[in-house]
Length: 155
Ligand SMILES: CC(C)(COP(=O)(O)OP(=O)(O)OC[C@H]1O[C@@H](n2cnc3c(N)ncnc32)[C@H](O)[C@@H]1OP(=O)(O)O)[C@@H](O)C(=O)NCCC(=O)NCCS
Image (cartoon, rainbow, N blue to C red; front, side):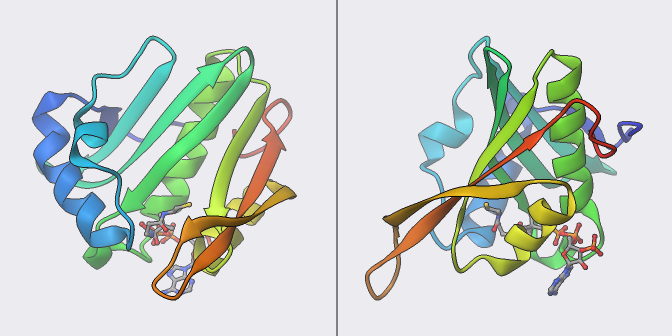
């Protein structure tokens, strides 16, 4: 895929907006320090920016051919417009460009919307970690998904 002009590397100047979205989009957000962490050499974090406003982002990392989507979110009022799909496609495309062979991620079992999106982009569920995530009433499973990046039409 062609990577959108709206997509740019995440830098410190984006962190305030990313942190605001993180708290709105996720029931269990990352900590602020994790959001503001300087990426390591294996990290590639991107933001979706329109007219100076961050509308969404992803945090990715790549080790030895395995690219992991650590976090992806779109501002609640901007969801349903295709930005999330383009963010995940961009993660896959950049991972492939960096030499990644497989994409990996974990998703809450209850997060059907994200699950369907990943499935539509070629991810398959290959493992399940029962009781992995906290919920209001207890805990829920993490579903582990993976896809091959080579020959993937979305990467
Ligand atoms: C998951 C998320 C990133 C998707 O981003 P988005 O911009 O809303 O997604 P898109 O608009 O690209 O839509 C993706 C798919 O979901 C579907 N979708 C969009 N809005 C929807 C809605 N209100 N209800 C159900 N499905 C919907 C779309 O049909 C689309 O499928 P398609 O490409 O086949 O048409 C976003 O909902 C989000 O930030 N959620 C909170 C954080 C989160 O759960 N992150 C993932 C953690 S694993």
